[in-house]
Image (cartoon, rainbow, N blue to C red; front, top):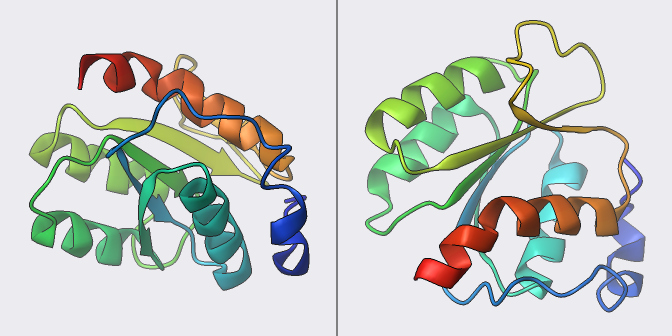
Length: 142
C-alpha cells in the first residue's frame, strides 16, 4: 500500500473531499497495524467515524457492540482467524445495509466480479475516491 505511517499528514488536503460524510461510520479490518492506522487516520481526516479491527472476529465483536449504523466495511481479504470473505458474509447477515469494500495485495479468488475491490498498494486519493463513491447515496439520504 502506498500509505506510509510517517507521511499521513502530507496527504490530508490532497486526498479529496468526502461527500459530506457527517456521521457516516466505517469499520476497517486489516491485520497489518501500520496499514490499518494509516487508513483510519486518512478516513478520520475526511470526516468519517472509524472503527478499527485487527481481524474479522474482532470486527464482528466491534459491530455487535456498536449501537449505530455501520455504513461501510473496509476489509482486507486475507486475515488470520476470519478472512474478509467470511467477515462480509457474517456482517451482512447482521447488518444487510452495510456496504463492503474489499482490499488485497494478493489473490482475489472467490470474490464476486461485481464486488467493490481496491488492489493494494493504492494511493490515499484512490481510497478516498472509492469510499466516497460507495457512500455517496448514503450521505445524501441521512
